Length: 459
Ligand code: UD1
Ligand code: CA
Image 1 (cartoon, rainbow, N blue to C red):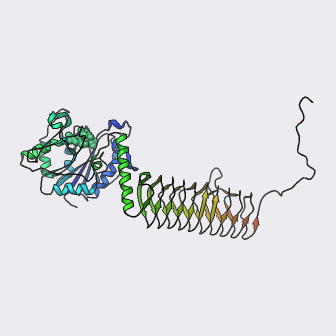
Image 2: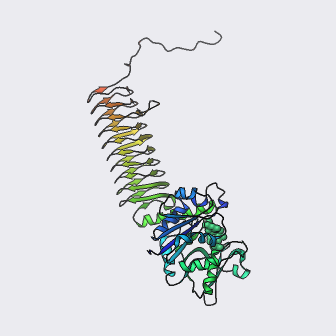
C-alpha cells in the first residue's frame, strides 16, 4: 500500500494466564500461531519494514516464525508498550508512517487496518478504538466536549468518572514516524504500573496541536486479545464461523457451518458439499460436486470432481481421482494416488500407493508401497506384507488382476496382468499373467471320522 510504511508488532509479553511453557504468541488458532495471523494481516499491507518486538520465550519466537522478511527486535525487559515500540525505532529510520499491532490480537483484518491507515493519512496520530459494553481492564478514550480525543487513561489510573467511558483503546495505532520518535523520547513511567505507556503519546500529540483521529474495526473480535485459553477458544470459534460464512457465500455447501473446521486453505469447485463435523487441514481442494461425509478429516489432499467421501474417513497427503468412492471408515495415508473411479471401502488402509482407474478395494484390506493397475479387484482381507522388520518392499499388481479374499502378498512381489489369485493364498513369488495362482492345502474330508464326545464324570 505504502512503501513508506513501517509496521511494529508487539510480542514480548509473557502471557502468564495461559499457564503454559510456550510463549503466548506461539499458541495456535486454526493451527497457525497467533503471531503468524498478525504477520499475515500486516504483510497484506505491503509495508517497507515489518518489525516484531519479542522478549518472553526468547529466540523460540523468531525460530518458530522463521520468516526472513521480519526484523526481529529483542526487548529484554518488558518496561511497557512505549518502551517496546522504542526498541523498534532504529528499524524504522527514514520511513513516513508507523502502524503498531499486537502479537496476541490475532484476528485483526487487513481491511480494518486499511481504514486506520486512511485516518492516519492527514493526522500525525490515529487510534483504533472500539466501544465495549464491558470496558473493564482496557484503556479508555477521553474526548472533550466537542468529541476531540484528549488522552487515553488506563484502567488502573482512571477516575470513577473515566471508568464510565465505553470507548476503549485497542492499542493499535498509526503514527507519523518522526512525531512518534519525538513523543516516545518524552515518555515517563510515572503511573500506577510504573511502565512506559505508549498510550501517553496521545496527550503529547494533543499538546502539539495534533487532531487525533480514530477508526473502528468491522467486528469487536478483530481487536480482542488472547490472555487465556478460554479467550483463545472463543476467537477460534469466531474465526471458524466467519470463514465458514465466507466459503458459503462463495458457493460451498456446508450442511452445518457451526460444525466445520478449516485449519488451512480450501479451494472448491461448483456444488462441492461438506457434511457435519468435517475437519480440513493444510491445503485441500475439492472438485466440482465432490462430497465429504460426516466426521471425516482431510489433510493436504486434492479431491477430484464428483468424488464421494463417505462418513468417518481420514485422508492425508493424497490425490483422489474423479468419481472415486471412499469409505465409510477408510484411511488414505500419505503419498497415495487413486485414479478416477476407484472404490475404497470400509476398514481399508492405503499407504504410499497408486491405484489405477476403476480398481476396487472394498473391504478390510491393507495396501502399502504398491502399484495397483487398472480394473483390479482386491478381495476382502487382502494384505500387502510390505515390511520385513527392517525394510519396506514393493507390491505390483497388473491391470485386471483379481485377488481373492484373505490373500497375503509378501513383497517384493508382482502379480501379473489379468492374473487371478485364489482366496486365502500367501503369495511369495511373482505370479504369471492371466493364470490362476493359489497357495493353500487341498481341501479334504475324512469319511468315517467321529467327533469326540465327553466321557461321563465319576464313571
Ligand atoms: C494495553 C493498552 C490499553 C489497551 C490494551 C488493549 C498501554 C499502556 N495500554 O494495555 O490502553 O486498552 O492494551 O489490549 O499500552 N508488550 C510488550 N512489551 C512490553 C509490554 C507489553 O511487547 O513491555 C506487549 C504485550 O505482549 C501485549 C501488548 O504489548 O501483546 C499489550 O501489553 P499489555 O501489558 O497486555 O497491555 P495492557 O495492559 O493490556
Ligand atoms: Ca492486554
